Length: 113
Image 1 (cartoon, rainbow, N blue to C red):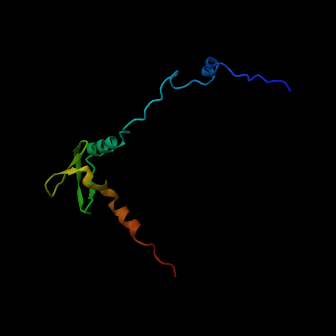
Image 2 (cartoon, helix red, strand yellow):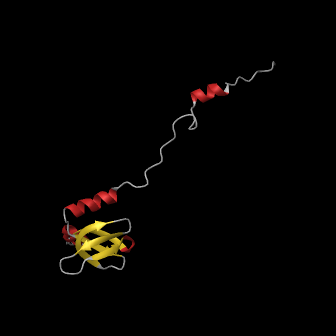
Image 3 (cartoon, rainbow, N blue to C red):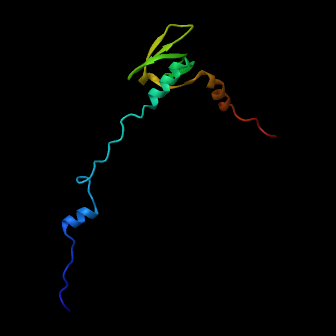
């Protein structure tokens, strides 16, 4: 048997075939925010949409959103004082018009028989 010579491509040839991040453009960092929350709040604010806000303790408040910022929203109400709600105290919120549909889904279907 004869000695075989290992054929290896040069480093520059490898760099041309398989570019690395260092040689090419850097991968962009994903956005920290999608702005979906802002879009939703703005849409509800512009339409003065009646909203139901459920707090973490189960309290339901009804009104429309006047403004919001990073940590809180201002809920205007017709029959009671306006409120400044911290977002961390909100469990969820939905449009008041969806309240009937939400309750209807919870009732069991009629039994057959």
